[in-house]
Image 1 (cartoon, rainbow over the protein chains, first blue to last red):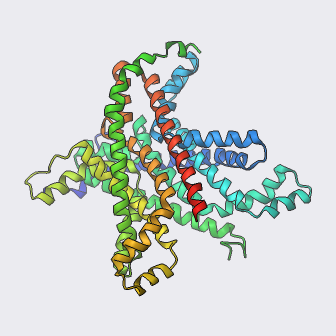
Image 2: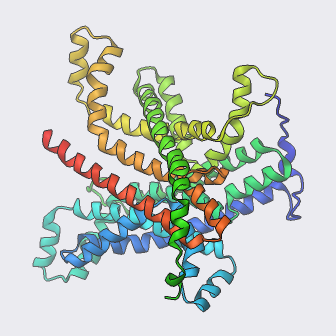
Image 3: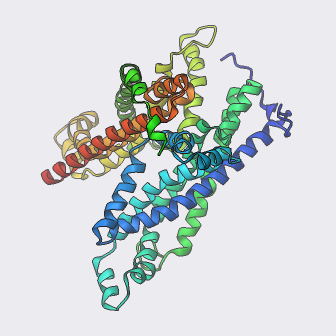
Length: 243
Length: 232
């Protein structure tokens, strides 16, 4: 392979004047973390609401949940980001559209909301599976004790369901981090984007991508370790994953 | 809604032949070939992971975990720049060889999907009761024969709905070749959108097309699943 390796490139100053190339990549990592965490909060909150809706006896509720999941699951994430970024401002009244377009950091917010909504469909499906996997007696016992539907979900069903789906939720969070790289297409310069710009400035393709790869692996490792601690912390003794 | 008054259906109509005969053909060919290649290599990786040679399993496990922790976009960039060098190394050429857009993305998607398909096939193989390969070897079948005629057909059958669902995900993921400015379906729509300044029409149309195809396909998978469930 006649490729000129230069691993010292990371310590050389980048042409943006923001320090070294390593600083460039690390600033990309920060954006990736920020956008992923925000997207994950959106996914968890809206996914939980939709997941609960899908398990309610009400026809309307489960129909809304069904439509939500099918809408966000059957379009490529890239297309969804384009819809939010390019199409939505045109469909709104002129002033609102203009305001959206001139929003500072528009790619960041679009990516967080777009990836978040995309992932919410998966969270909803997981939570629904978690709730329906609980023995029917739990819900019946809550009703017999005089708990309202809200109380049943709040104190009986959800605490158990979330514990059960914690392992799949971990991989969905990892998916959120990976999916945030798609936002490169709407101009968000996150980790993959910074690796790309380092490659364009320095021509050191493989060093740039190797560094990005290592950073993604590290991020994965941190998340997996943290989630394992959380799993152990919330485990209920004697129940499935409990001690 | 002042906007719908400006909606130009004619832009879509004029672009239809290009969108489907160029764009969609690329997308569907890439999806089909990558699914097939991903399944073949994925099955091999699954067999490696389950083999009694510890180091083979470890290599396969490392590959799967490695690929699965990376964003597809980054993998696409990796292969786009790496494949010419690998080609040079394989052919012994003096310079990095030029690889077409289609070949480059096909290699990327096969390598990427193999990791995901292998996990599905591994679950499928493990779902077969131990008595089956034991009976096969009692009948005098070799390892290869027992896999070929006993284990893999059943594993494949049991996992068919999951494999097809993964293929729908793959179909959606192929849109990411957009980052290499390759005219797949979305790339073609985007080209027309930018040329004619009709982003709203083209992106909405692309969204509807992806949505309809994915919906119909996943409906088909659900029906298949209920059919298979009755047989068992």
